[in-house]
Image (tube, rainbow, N blue to C red; front, side, top):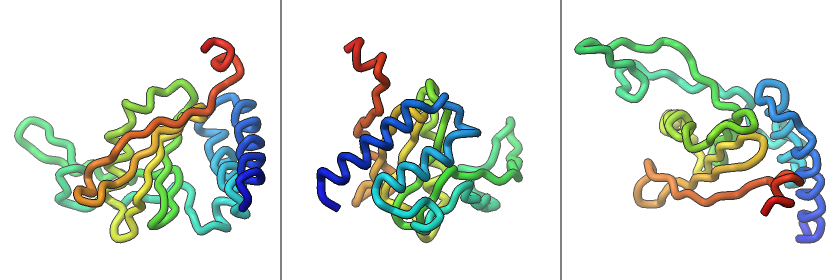
Length: 159
């Protein structure tokens, strides 16, 4: 895809994203589908990604057990990642305004339990900005941080 074509496609996506109310439950999947289309995929499903990917709970996993006092109890509920594109990317969506830094533990837990097709890229997104993480080549449990944001017109005018 030519860089001008990609830029135009991404600008259309940003225009779409700016007009969303910012509600995770009702807008996350259309947001993600438009994002995939901006990168010239036919859509999320057509690209081979899965919405609401079930994260397996493994008995005995310390990361998935609740420690209460001296007893250990399995949580027993399934978790769902908003989007998994196996061996490519994991995306967890939040509503606009949610502090993505506070969601790191959740996305890291999901990422550590996607085996064997763990993706090298992870994104937290609050329908206004992204926090991308890349698994380290030497230490897969470490993510490097690099910010990327979709600015709203009001924010652009303020600074």
